[in-house]
Length: 342
Image 1 (spheres, helix red, strand yellow):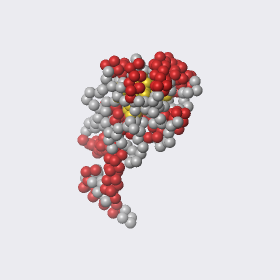
Image 2 (spheres, rainbow, N blue to C red):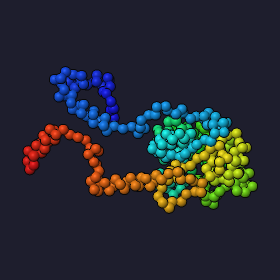
Image 3 (cartoon, helix red, strand yellow):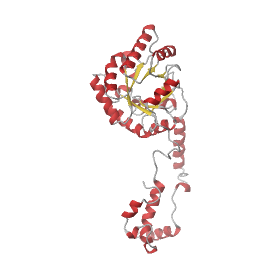
Image 4 (spheres, rainbow, N blue to C red):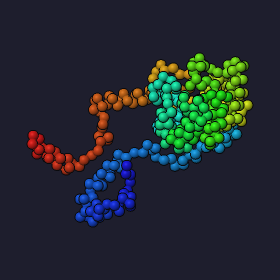
């Protein structure tokens, strides 16, 4: 939409009778155009809002490595569309993950196994348009990478090229190392994910804490080391005892991102819908989720107030409407009255 003065190139294309700097005799011809432009200016909006005075420097792999070396926790949160990506980026998140949890929180599916690659790419593209500073990562959904390393690479290329994110994430430990190596060798950063891997919930016996036994903790460490050697730039540890996660983190050269794994990890991630409280009362939340807001309650209150004001005609108030000159209104009323049956 047009905003501000008429650009010089646009003025040059206007007929002389419609030029904004034409003699006064042409003002009658100019007035409709200016009225349209004024209306467009009043109606225009930017999905990004007003740019910040000092835009954040873009987060890169080098930025994340610098945070890790300095011992500063890395912040990551999920996003599933433009608004959630925009607010995450504006809040200063280091990383934004377009997680396959969007299957439930954005698409109303039963679990993450339902979402497909094309859907993930669409959501990645939406988030990427908003997250200008954060390092963005897109999940590879179940069925898009497990068959062979070449399948993983093909899917990763699509997520990067079409989804416009900077890295991909997929679940699994040692068994996925060849795929990690194939993707990273092609120049695509990979975020690993071990511990509780939701895509494999059926083989894990449900959403269960991992690494609670000595054997389980050893497997977790071996998986993490294998992913590190395969080229992962970081690894997510989900639903793991805090003590185990701390020891695994200390054994690695790359950062760990915890979700239900204690403060000993190199960073933390949460699902945005969960931590902002954007869900109805009674919804189950994992133990590790801390609710920092009540987006559902505030949204419901606002929508209910809007509904009530529409029903009582309190909205729109005069300040929400556009004026018309009394002379123009009187002429319009006269024309209506003069029509047959008016």
